[in-house]
Image (cartoon, rainbow, N blue to C red; front, side):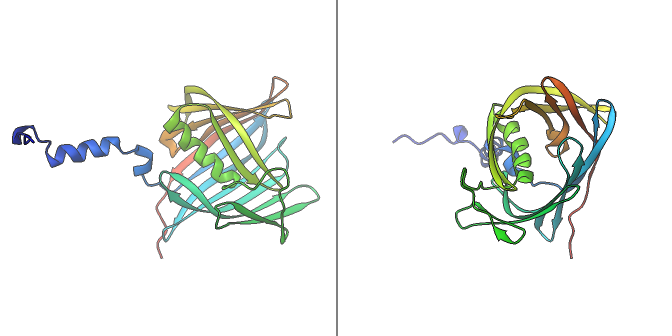
Length: 242
């Protein structure tokens, strides 16, 4: 066997560079804590708002989601415990409260050894007869959807367990667009989700430069725009150490 001439051997530095280039960027990057605020309008009138906050507390990732949007039901408060695994989020547990005018439902979920969500509603275990529980909650699904579309740039399927049911939706990738926020344009992925049983179409735009967060969302019914949600404020923060 002929030996490789010394001058033709790749240097260790070149091998390291090649390895870095081949490593998926999203997998290498560690998520940074942030808080994002949203404002909603319906036919030009104020229609609620919400927030999304990623907290790193002594190495533990927590996602805090709050919102109350007209036309989409009551107020939602969600607290998810997450882990970062190979460039995607994994739901470890979540607590959620959904409150309306005259009702309130409390949900607690934890991850089973099989990697699925075991959910209690008001302290009682839920049994999912139509579809088995998913491996993630709704808040985690939106985070992973934004990460996946940046990587794959194609139509995606996403399932999640929320409330009393497990949902599995197809999201059509409509390409990249420039969306204005805070005086500048951001590259954003446009995804469209059509509800299988209702005449409702929801469009989502996720901005990679803003920690892959939602920068815009619209909801149409029978071709009429009913809801327009926009990112109103975005700030990065520091991890909490004790």
